[in-house]
Amino acid sequence: MSAKIVIVEDEDDLLELLEYNLTKDGYEVEGFLNTKSVEQHLEEEDIDLMIMDRNLPGVEGSEFVQDLRERGIVTPVIYLSAKNKDSDVEEGFLRGGDDYITKPFNMRELLLRVKAVLRRTGKKVNLGNLSHRDIFLDNNSKTITIDSNNVEVTKLEFNLLSEFILNKNCVLDRDYLLETVWCDGEDYQYRTVNVAINRLKEKIDPDKTKEYIQTVRGVGYKLC
Image 1: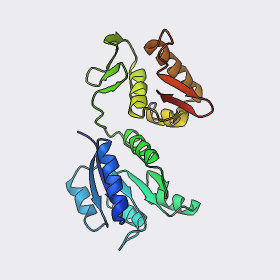
Image 2 (image 1 turned 180 degrees about the vertical axis):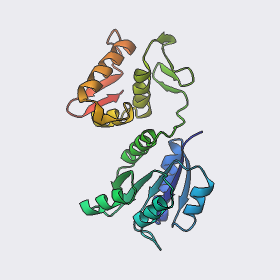
Image 3 (image 1 turned 90 degrees about the vertical axis):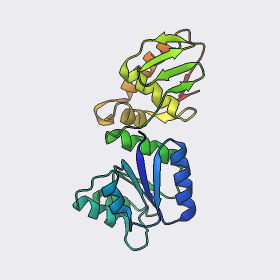
Image 4 (image 1 turned 120 degrees about the vertical axis):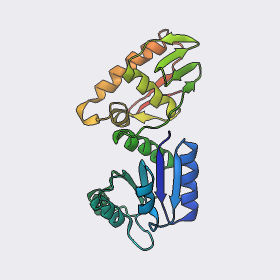
């Protein structure tokens, strides 16, 4: 099953845009214009993540989340808010937030952060089988074939290539890869990413003719 996400946003157009993009990315999404029915929904449904505005009618978003935490509801929360002062961001985290994005925002960044929070909190994302050019990844058997030939990879290399395919043509920096693939970036260094990517490139492109993964100097890597 794909992850279930609740969005609480009082701007109709933005709520619709968020629902569209998250649904397109494979999530089950439920949108609310205020918090009136959200707590009951969280108690009745197995929700994996909330995207929460703070400037809401009736109750301020972070106060609502703080109240949820006091009631024992620990559903991960990403704040999406126009409150952008350092003190606002700190307040959001102190009141139970797992991540904080300020408006105006980049939709692609939001989608990447959603994946990161879901992975970090142990929620499963339904990836399905993945493909790119002549590469095919089977998520059931955790195998990779290139041009119908099997390629032996480690679990980490499989997950690394999956992340690239999920974000094809996007530049992924080392911090993001450490957080999403290694899951705890603080325990590793950038050299860890460099070595793993070089090993993966040797396996999927031993002749160095296809150049699936390209280095973006000073930024990170992208799949082409």
